[in-house]
Length: 198
Ligand SMILES: [Zn+2]
Image (cartoon, rainbow, N blue to C red; front, side):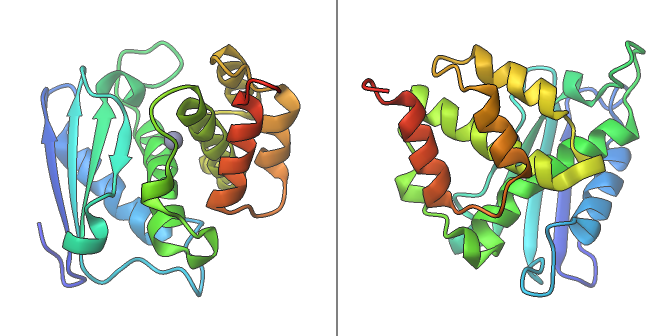
């Protein structure tokens, strides 16, 4: 689908009866036009192609490595994460929106906000530091999303404490509600908590 804005959204759902593609498309449209990280100096690009795929085997995440050269981003959504968190076996539009607000938070920070100073080539290699970097960035995003966040501070702290770096609750709390940070500051924190000399 290509609207007058030049934004194309393609949605593929492995099980369209479980997760209707139209619901996902509608949620993506809403999120890209109402995202709280979009402010006067940070706007959605006029041309953007968003490929969304939903399946029970997907690992939820947004890939924007190709964005600077092609204008494409791809988003994988794990079907299970889209269900209402109250135990009912139904996809919840509210939950889909929250997951999307979070994932697009990564894209906006990395690719649209010059103050974040993202550097794709300097992401930590696979390993404990990469995991810590994502826990910290996730908490930084959810803290700013407020009511749109998919997880609470306590849930983020619990997850971060379980990873190999065992990030302390205070580290997650301070990035959750602290002042704006850059990619470099997140990297330094991730390095500090994974460095062998502590
Ligand atoms: Zn994330």
